[in-house]
Length: 141
View 1 (cartoon, rainbow, N blue to C red):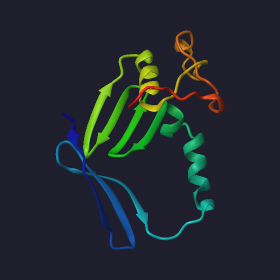
View 2 (view 1 turned 135 degrees about the vertical axis):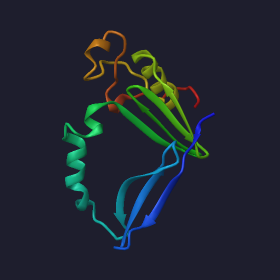
View 3 (view 1 turned 120 degrees about the vertical axis):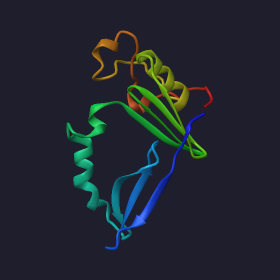
View 4 (view 1 turned 60 degrees about the vertical axis):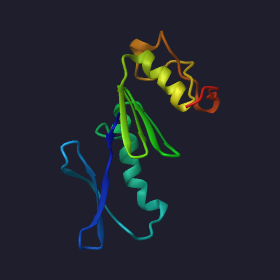
């Protein structure tokens, strides 16, 4: 059984809102603040550049794949598979690179066929197809 996931959004009194997640110990952890106002795509250029290029960004430091599902979402990182279904969080640590490759195929329909950049020690065992030639797996979720 997974743990219950809970989130909270609260006003901060300055026309902004705060997003919180309840931790396992019952305490609420603040994640970010946001405003409800229209934005242009160009408003996000600087933040996008940071997330795409900064060595401090999670997205440049590890593999990450995530998608929404009808009842929650599923995410895969270098070392774990996380699924949230109907408010319940389920985590499974990955044993090794082969477990990552299998989870990528089974949960996202992505099959690795060529070397995966940045994982030199694993290149002999699995490979990544260029994005334009990714093949959908026939496996089910």
